[in-house]
Length: 213
Image (tube, rainbow, N blue to C red):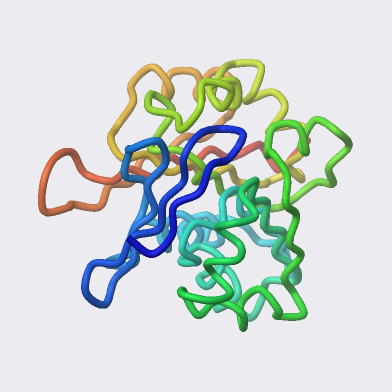
């Protein structure tokens, strides 16, 4: 156990396992530093689908830094806005997770806030929106997060997308109901999977708006 602390949303824990770190919220495993393939795919696959010259990227959920690192590794990216609601996660990235270089990159804009509220409160538009704040649409860290995956939440997300933009959503397992909701609000929907040692594959949903909007 590296650190355990209370938050307004419950207990948050950083744990070390050998050379790796794990983040646990209210006893539920959220993420670790072991792999990162699906978190990187979340960003890379979305960027592949846009033609903006200096794309603006939103990363919802800092996590252990894989998605932010992937966004910054693309030289086309003009700015990456990272929205993370837990100050401790930001602090852990700067200390134990060696993420200061990513967070201090001139293209990184860090916002410590709850993602849904921040988006609703006049957030700018983005070419790519990458969400990784839960274990998936059907397994949220807190009940309030479920709103983002609802029809109302998808309308909000679409309103913050530039024409031709892409929404990418990470999930620890496929979700047929969520995919069906995506197809109601977006013209193109794709599901990508990454096999993991146990259980269902990690899943990335990609949803794109028409460039004509």
